[in-house]
Length: 187
Image (cartoon, rainbow, N blue to C red; front, top):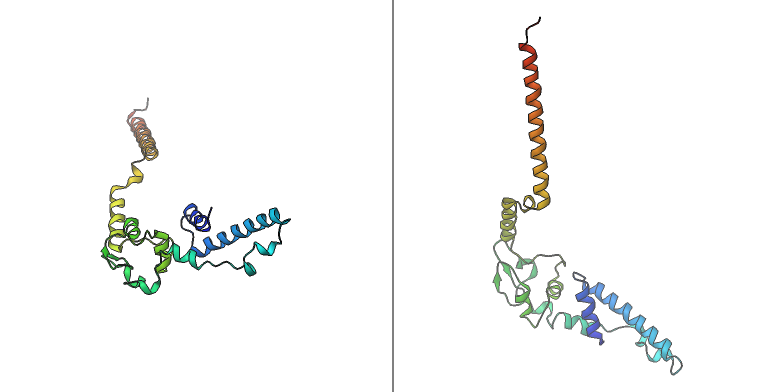
């Protein structure tokens, strides 16, 4: 496995991981690899021939590849101005959308969502949707109440209605009993 494949594997197997964390994991894996390699090849050469000089890894090519060659200076829209109430602007090309999709981001040299978020300085959890769309979806969810349509929810509401019916019957019987007690003449 080549170094770039290892780095991509780390990124894809850990969604939402920051570049710095991925790089730390990558460095750790490389150090272990070099350590094992050195132990195996120790009889043929000294370990310093296999380790990178001063144990420093050059991660610039990995980061550049992760960001598909884009730099902050290349951005057409400032990230802090890109997410607005009615639209989301692509920071790379300036296109205006309601929701910035992974497909659109990939059009920029196969850039990933994680790479885009890192390039723009967003948190990994940042949604690339305009705020009005978020509010609209929230209203639709609250209106449709999907949590009430689950099987478990229906069973619970059925039990509640049975319990309520039983309480009404019990209350009605006790009220009728009290009325009957009042009506009976004393003998």
